[in-house]
Length: 57
Image (cartoon, rainbow, N blue to C red; front, side, top):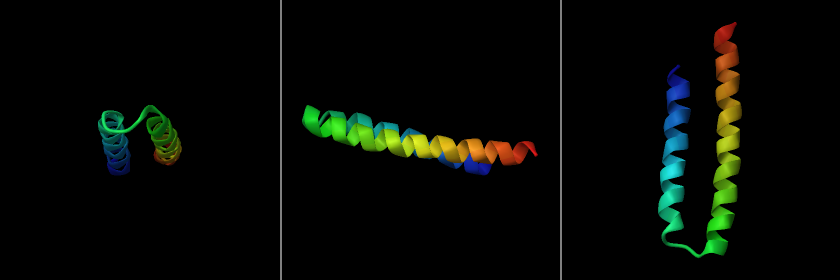
């Protein structure tokens, strides 16, 4: 579960950065950053699912 905690913390940090970014960039720039963060969070979810599947075996 250590890896899961790492990915949860990483996802939380990304959300915090995204929220801070929202306050300092234009709407157009924020849409771009939000898309990139969403893609990274999707990849994190895939990693976490793989970890959980391995741990179930």
